[in-house]
Length: 498
Ligand code: ADP
Figure 1 (tube, protein in one colour):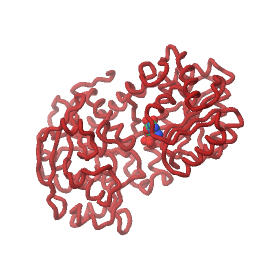
Figure 2: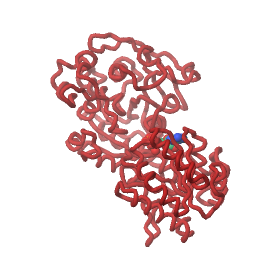
Figure 3: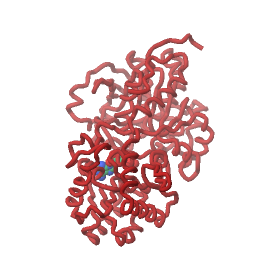
Figure 4: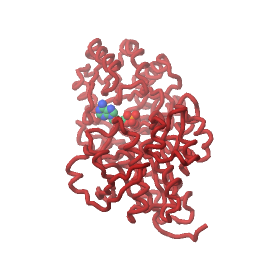
């Protein structure tokens, strides 16, 4: 082993999206927050992402050109610019190629396989050519960066600055794997003559799977909650990759995501009618009244108000909610839903809104400000997901003293401690099976506590609001993994309590 050195570990965090530049989902939130927390935890961090045409002009104007070179992509030699922007103290590098990235959206194009193979190869080229991007650990995320660990090992292993780079791959959602026709192997990846790579990238007779490449080539695999790390090893959740997750179980870690506790803080949130805190929850009553008014619901403090905020897709367990709606309405529960997604679900919730005007409301929209008012004004947050790699909404709800009602899966199981009526412990309510009656019973049990035991309810709110969902905890766990990969670099700054 090399002599030990005391310096900051250099992490290059590769992602296809990062807040505030570009976001389609949770990955954007993670890439916008985790690198900053890693920096606080003592690492030297840079983030690398594509320079999309849709990045707001105010950011594009501030970018500085730091390098350009040509990236070999099978028979092509493709231009690549590297632009840099330091945003709130963190260095972001943007991979520039207008033919690939100057488009309205991020994904969903006919040539996504080529665009993100280019991005992954450009990351490796940048490590080898741009001194400020040299790193100890390349941390890749989801299929869009999944080919980088493969390229790094197969094409860059002879280059001194690349030889000691360790790779981590984080699975944010195994449903999206980046599968393409096997024509890409020769035509884009240039790996047709590399037997090891060829064999490991096939997932079906004529299909190449980028994520499979990363799962087999990366030094460490992580995912966004401990329970999802277990579930990925089961056929029901593994989306065809479960045998690989089982094979690599020794290198697979589940680390629960955090939330931005500055943005999500009922004490200071400027978008809610009344601020409140764990010490004094009294303002929450006015937030509830205002929300009931806004939704046209009866302004009755004794009615439990359960809300949902999220994508209206099958993953979120909406069939259970649809099935139980009449029963919940007959018991006097108020329900409000904010979301967009599959038309079938949107129509169902619009129908319930029409049918139960003063007891149920649906807003088919993406409305961040309204979501804040809902987290603050509700009593309960309903999230009966079929699967949930991590889930942020339940953590946000707890931070606002809104008790989650969740199915015990993935990150929901790891972040919500179910109420124990004998000890008073807990931060929410949970049920285990994908069964509408079980969900309704769980929600109505929660309402029973709300109606009959104010002290227990208040205690649950205090416990939920006191949970630590900051990124600091996750960052420390990632730092442990990075340092295990580079034992020769002793900790520069082990700050456990930032
Ligand atoms: P997923 O990443 O599966 O969509 P998460 O719970 O991890 O689900 O994150 C969803 C995030 O997006 C939460 O912050 C939630 O408040 C927000 N969100 C989802 N849908 C909407 C909407 N229609 N309006 C406002 N915010 C939304």
